[in-house]
Length: 299
Image (tube, rainbow, N blue to C red; front, side, top):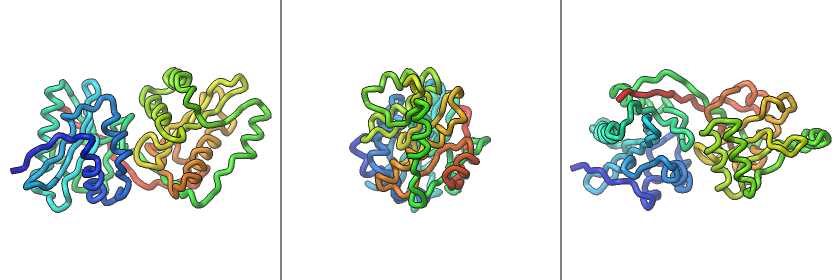
């Protein structure tokens, strides 16, 4: 008889292995550390919203969700490929939707659970998952893209560009841990709450994975982060204050992050939930590598 087992931090090895076996387009990317951060370090996550489905001692599926106010998200889910079309997915979805409904949720969204997310939506290459959700009342109305950068193709050197800006008093450097409060306050005043959370999570990384632009008065005026959402090598978020745009700071911040990833041995970076596609294409030769569908269901 299939039964649910609440997901716990000591299940991360099992969860990582299960994901790497069953997500054919993301094999090898579900590292324990990544899952720990994106699931258990999410301050909104409740243990009851994550579970394995087991039958005869074997894990045949899992589902993880999160509730933020009156909105809920399916953060990650899968059924073992050898057990598709067995009703296991339906059983797990019914359970988590009931839990969300009892907690007061009015909508459930699919995967784009910012600021702690692994995918910015449903990759339609997982066709069976798309069909499954559509058959249970989920509708999709928005498309977003990720872009990939080959880190072996360039050295991403910014020495000359930074030297030119330095003569005007503008500097670019890595965020320091002792600047956490200053950075947090600037992010919150300048950008969204989600971007603030995402970029401040870079302070948990070693080294810190955010670079700053500082104006002539040593005030923060731009930032770029990596390894704070999605999988290892994920770039973003990034932004430059409007008053400082047009000086090439966005490009330098991007290149500093890519060079840092390259120096750490990464061979590829994926820019998530891209807005300015042409900027990334023209600047670093990025190409769209995946398209994601964002959707929801009213409870």
